[in-house]
Length: 251
Image (cartoon, rainbow, N blue to C red; front, side, top):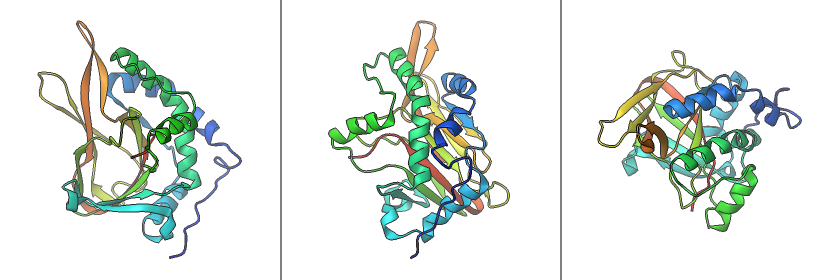
């Protein structure tokens, strides 16, 4: 197969990804993450970028991806996804590096509140060095593809000892036009309470930042941990593509 060329719009050219990430409303995102464990970053990617990334799924060269997972074979749901190989496509690598510095302070605040000693460096490259030194060397950013009837069971993306507590999913398809159903779903399990579910509405190009494993919640006796899981509800029609950005690598 011939490789698909990703666009380089003026907003992302010449190393502008850090500026593009910095222009997001991180105050609102931080508050939302503290309050509910997720935050929407609207219009993170343009329609052209979304379409080019979605086309990679079936048209990229074999070296673009390191593996393909068919969910039903493993009891993960129905649908499939592909993990990127290193070197990552420029857009994916740039997003990973540009978003991380804004999320690391939140991750450190959460660990402090939960009594976890781990702290995360300011630069993603330094965190990657930590992962790779521990044998976590396989890239985890991925593309997911769903068709009518597909869904993703509730899960957590834990790939080794070193886990960055936040991750990002970017919707690459247009709800209502490209697909129906297929909502992004989060659940929260508080101690001695029933699980709470939340559906996060997204438009094409929107990203959602959410907790990978657990997050702190303020209780009457101080902060405590709640378990978080995420998934995708059943697609009723069409096709849905998503870019997943996980900041730790896998063993």
